Length: 305
Image (tube, rainbow, N blue to C red; front, side, top):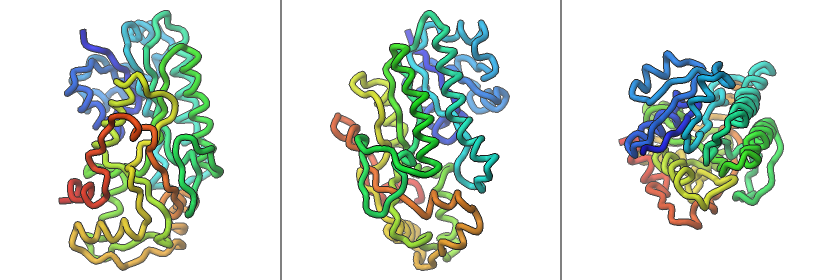
């Protein structure tokens, strides 16, 4: 019998890649979405599509029968737009409130899933030019750190429901079909590429394939629990990132984008690219997990050429 999995936030970049991988592994996938029309277009082969508004209804509760795991990816985008006070509330509520509602619905079911995997972000650690963070590090300060803390506090309640809980703190995702990389490489293709801001900020990145494999490891390895960092074991500083992308694309990488330009364009949201943190994936490395793309140049070659 195929194991059944519910995925929220499946229409995003990570969700689409994860759905493909889980389908290849012959899991039976149920999509829980606020936009079932879009989800049905993207995933016509899904076992079932459920609208988010059906939480706590008989339809949803029946769908939870014989569910092995829930993978919760839902959350509004934090990049690409300014963080007004209104949008900050959307960012927070789309993570904290959805996690609370989802777990409250699971609580009402007689039959609970075995595993609850929730996404999070390395923003949990705050930013630092000199610090080094792993899963044992404390939470930092700032808007994103506060969002991640509240988000994880809700997700941790899965433990009270007797589910194995894994929290995936994701770094900067590199992919060739969305995310940060396509936006960051456009200037290089126009021969005006280079580092953003001081160039001294750390970039804790991860290739999309390694990220998806970490989710699979979290799903299938019963020894994994609590927070795990989903980042490459070899983070780089922005200057090195720019140099590497320029090398791979055979383009110059010395046109620096000043910090004030990013602040004018994005306001507080510019902190995503202007600040950083050196995050190491110690938990996943202590097991048998193998990074296919541990080094930036290999990852860039795979994604950009």
